[in-house]
Length: 272
Image: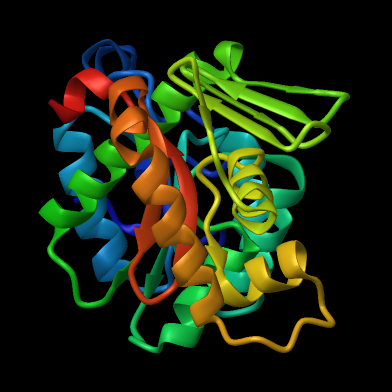
């Protein structure tokens, strides 16, 4: 295994800046998927580099938060593995900066199991989180899964439309806020106003996780003093009306345990 370049805070194998340290033979063997690891633990970086390169990913790494965005821009990654606790700028700051300019999937790595850490990371735009210590095989599986979802979302983007008249459409689904109507599988679905508004809000932000508090604030309004249980009840009612239809077409409301909900798109064939 190569040593660590302390000046640049990344592995020598990756080069100080870009891809030039990969030989052409390396590039021929690897796929085009680029993984960026931002973690101050050299042992974790070395271990994950071994695992991902063995699976023919190209890996770039950075050991501190101050240089993370520089390496991000130069490596143009397909997925970022981001530690929360970093020297210099922390993972929250890096996540926020990445989200200002890119939708690249971000998996947070955290040594703490606090729900608050997870919620804050997801609210800033992270797509998933893994608690340390973790098995490299699990992280690799999560990367593969998130890349599959990202690829599926990209393929489906041409079939997802939000029009100026507040109408969002997916295969087999149309939610019209102007007319307050939901049509699924060519059938009109009866929903209460708040059920429809909640369903619409999630659907116009596909694959983005919202906490119950965020949904209360954005759907019910900041002056609403009800409990977060209100969101759970409305989600349950929506699912009862459209869940089976969604499985047929590749969409639905997914629960992110201990955090909240998201409107998820997926390949319906893979669910059968």
